[in-house]
Image (tube, rainbow, N blue to C red):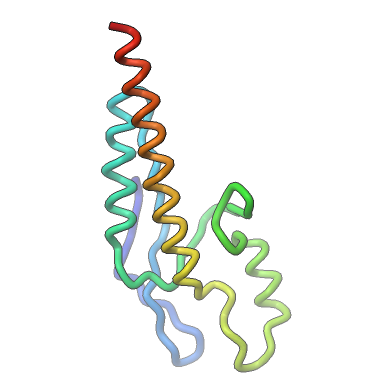
Length: 119
């Protein structure tokens, strides 16, 4: 997992806490699924994230809540003065972190079931 925290980004003079690139995937098999749990928990432990510096499109319904880079960029182009910045979205960050934990838990359960069945 590649994750950088402690990044500050600015919209004019307003600063925001950002994280970038943040992946929670594990790897193949049971060991990879266990690593996925560790990665997802690390992701969720980062507090106060307001901006995810996305490197993938990740649009809904399967990706980042609220839209990915392309959707948010389109909103930025039509942003009115004083309107919120479309990339500043702490609620979506929290949803994404929780979804990563849920997905990792399902993957781990499936890999444990496969390992038990193989014995």
